[in-house]
Length: 348
Ligand SMILES: Cc1cc2nc3c(=O)[nH]c(=O)nc-3n(C[C@H](O)[C@H](O)[C@H](O)COP(=O)(O)OP(=O)(O)OC[C@H]3O[C@@H](n4cnc5c(N)ncnc54)[C@H](O)[C@@H]3O)c2cc1C
Image (cartoon, rainbow, N blue to C red; front, side, top):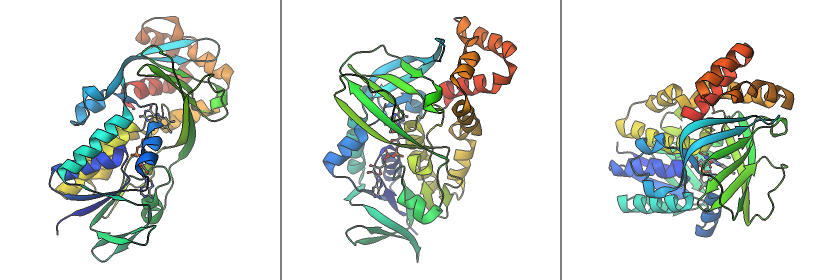
């Protein structure tokens, strides 16, 4: 039987899946509930920070998508300790990247349907996808790329991501250094306040309730689902990106996971290997349980404890020397030092 795939949601995960399917001659229909204007507004909300290693894995991400090259993450702890970590990151122009990617999908032969999917049920030979206007379509495979409140997850998997973190961002018309600034505090409960460059603008964000920057010209917010759902593949039904809660619960990066999972899921469908997608995710560093453990530890720490943990790390310029010194001083924080390092090197 030839695969006829419904991709629900045309964000980063959905487009990535659609490109990989269509490039290999598999029929893909991509659904999105948003109008053109709504789509533009929804997908503008994002710090758009992404690790450069994702560029090497996705051939359609181009250097021209980059607004800022980001070689440093500066983590600000309570008590005045700043820890600098060398990273290989970038801020992309997400709206223009998604526009270009949608055009690429269309040129490869994907069909786009504008409409809200309200239910997905198993039926003879596949799945019935119902839209809010009453239309019903049948497909052999379905990929849920429909974000935080995924209908596919609700209808076919019946599970929830471990954390649903509300995030809000503000754009201000100022130029900031090409680095990711992350400010930790007990009031952010395991999250942080960020200051990211965004071309010649600045993107500041945090949990709701944190102080707003003055003079902002644009703002928006959404939920970031993290901590993953237990099952992401079940007999020709798949979950990718935010629908599967794949964002990292320490740095909250979800773009890489969305783009890579879309691609991997499509490859699993093309190869016909049952279970291959689930195995990929279990082996992927992005799904490491270490991140959830670190999130839980950070969420329970007071400002005093965060300051104590960070103080010896900020003492030396060399991160390795700082790590050794901090580990000798506070052995109980060793898992957290390692977790932070893994997050910023590999977890986004
Ligand atoms: C404020 C903020 C800042 C962020 N900053 C970063 C960052 O700096 N770096 C990073 O890596 N990640 C960041 N993220 C996370 C990142 O934006 C998400 O992880 C990523 O967008 C997930 O992509 P996705 O394709 O899985 O889902 P989404 O981008 O949510 O796309 C889902 C699509 O599905 C459509 N859809 C939903 N329901 C239906 C339905 N029922 N029927 C049809 N269509 C539907 C939606 O309209 C949407 O187009 C941030 C998130 C927020 C909220």
